[in-house]
Amino acid sequence: MAALPDNDPSADAPGVSPRAALVLLGFVIVLWGANWPVMKVGLQFIPPLSFAAARMVMGAIILFAVAAALGELRFPDRRDWPIVLAVGALQMAAFMALTTVGLQFVPAGRSAILAYTTPLWVTPLAIYVLGERLNRLKLYGLLCGLGGVAVLFNPFGFDWRDPHVLLGNGLLLAAALAWALLIVQVRRHRWQGSPLSLGPWQFSVAAVLLVPLALIFEADRPWRWSSELAWVLLYNGPLASAFCFWAMLTINRALPAITTSLASLGVPAFGLLASTLALGEPMTATNSLGFLLIAGGVAGVVLADRA
Image 1 (cartoon, rainbow, N blue to C red):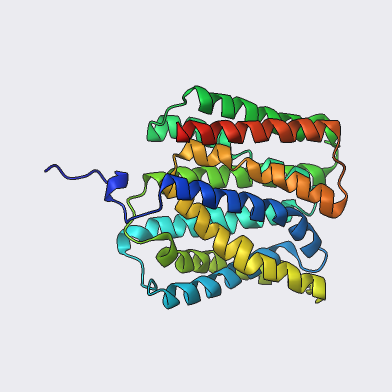
Image 2 (cartoon, one colour):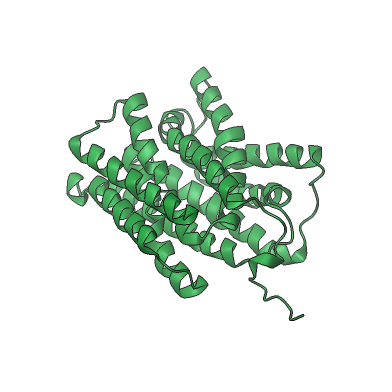
């Protein structure tokens, strides 16, 4: 029998079924979407890099405990270290730092939209690098979802002369690019361990990168402890960090890269709705149209993979 190529998914450690991955994706859309207004509240009490570092430390502690309890705590195989470093550096450290800092200068709803322009980068990469194809339903989902992003982004709706606005929007777009590179890398990697066995180490890599940055750049910005901050950290540690990052790695392994990136557009749509309800950010006719377009795009992608 011929040897399997290094990027052959059949050589991977067992994962979940595509149907289970879609269920997990639904939970991630709700939990991460709702987290945008939660993070906006949290930034009133904690500096952005410290917030990102705290999430990674809490995520590492929780996943070390869960992996140990389920008998999955082990040192990663040397062949898995590239993905451990990539996830820790790109999806966790870079994405979290860039989005949290950018969120200081950009409304929560718009921040969610910009951070999830990932399909703009993933689609050409997946077609060229992974050989994935766009069928009619996925093409519909891409055009519909990106049309919704374009409607919601509305570059004429903010002041380009404000350097803080430019910085915030630029950081959020850079975060989307970092995550796009990671999605493609996850699909190419030949897994030896499971997402749960590797998760604690990925969070540890992110924590090692973010904690020193927070100590260096935010030493003069103390935390303002309050009950609100406690609830924000409680939501972000177990749910928005430990569970959602583990779930996204599991989803990335089970579904095509284009499917994952397009379906994740549900996060900014839900984030926009949550920001309107929780923070009173306006739900204009433009926002409503963008929300419906993204929802239609996500539906098209889901139907394409069930067909």
